[in-house]
Amino acid sequence: MRTALLAVATLLATASAPAAAATWKVDRSHSQVGFEVTHLMVSTVRGAFSGFDGTVETDASGKLTKIAGTVDVASVDTKDTKRDDHLRGADFFDLAKFAQMSFTSTQVTGDNTKGYTVTGNLTIRGVTKPVTLTVAPIKGPVKDPWGNTKGGTSLRGKINRKDFGVNWNAALDSGGVVVGDEVTLVIELELNQAA
Image (tube, rainbow, N blue to C red):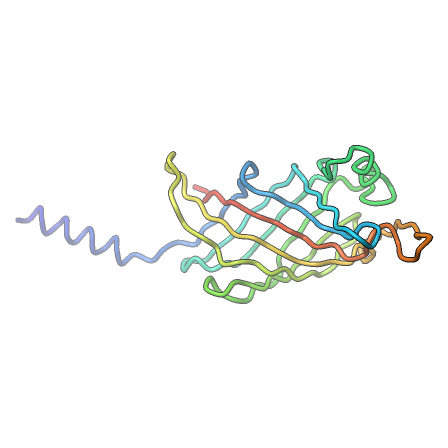
């Protein structure tokens, strides 16, 4: 009888204990950091970076509190080697001088029902500007077959590349330009809860 009472007391204590805040690491093999930009005024070119890292922090209720990440410029991939080399050059990302881009949130509003608005500092080519991202509610947590605690979310935002000194363009004979100024950020994240 005493053993049963102790078991019930332990169960109740565990159930009433508050959840802890958590840090989540981005699972690179199941995530994507991509972008979209208008090409020749008639189509959209999509690209992605294979080299990136990041963390997401949540409070005890599971609410998002912070996002931070870096992207390796050398890993850009638009499915065209010549274009990718151009993007790495001084006309665009200037890899020789600026190997990484980074983002660190400064303010998070919203909740895990409707999603979040995240404001933070984005640095590209050594230029740091505030940007605002829309972040979907964090899904999970779930356990994968190997016992890891997983979550997931997606981020969207728009920036003007010229704000970061990415100014290259060329005029078209018919009017317009080769590359649009507005770039859409498209990010899908799967997260691993840190131990």
